[in-house]
Image 1 (cartoon, one colour):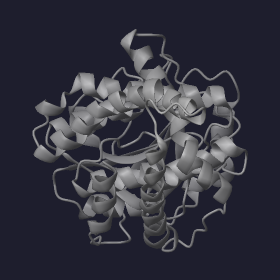
Image 2 (spheres, helix red, strand yellow; image 1 turned 180 degrees about the vertical axis):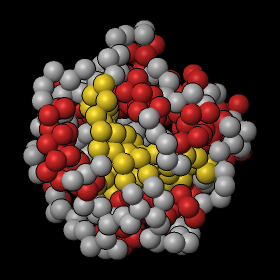
Image 3 (tube, helix red, strand yellow; image 1 turned 180 degrees about the horizontal axis):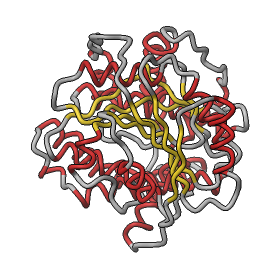
Length: 376
């Protein structure tokens, strides 16, 4: 799988866009639950986009009990942004987005998390990629990176995860025109297609199920690495576990809703079929590999032996290739600087999987026993 990922990245050549300055009118949906602290900044970054077309923003207030609504209208008056705020009483992000799509009249609709800030070129690059794609395109996922990586070691680890692993996987999937998640945090969709397949499902991974529904209808889903948004990563272990277990549950929901062998496109069969292996890998890593490492420290090589050290050069080489590729093809082009968290990079290479696999396994167990959903 690592060889497949790295080789795909090296062979990938993103097609040039037809028009780098589109003027299509777009709507941005922002689902908000108690986002008083950050919603104004989110709207300010939308206002400061270099996009020449009209941007209409719909904030869906999903049972907030703070001053979220007041902050939205403070932004409307202070920034002069075209924004309205509507209410959705039923809890859940999918309910909020489905309410917002009913008010959407534009050809394209974007979704943006309320704690996510856009790079100045983000919307322009997403729309340009959408306009340059074949008619079968349904969505384009933006690239989401971490903006609070200075907070602590956990946020620094996630910075490397987003920058290297997540972005590279999406780029590989996009090469086959089948990005598996047009994430709700920042993506663009064709409004009529979203409406035609019933919008977002009642799922904790509503964006995963929506994307897989699109793929099952033989639509294409792209990834635009130069359309960047910066999100607030969890800095507490409890919040991190909730988020990543939720992502794991969302993947299982996608597999349940649309089986890989039911996908009409052979590439989509392969890409979604890989996800069938992920729970097995996380289970084996958690139940066998981690205890095996502990035993090896005391000289018992029943599971993990000294030859494991040979994996390190391969791992370092793979991530070095991904690092250099991201730097040259994304950060240098956008005049962005990579934060020099090299100690966190080493910890990420050697120990991040020790954290992420048990958390993902916890998410699979939650979904297996239909445990209570927690969105935040």
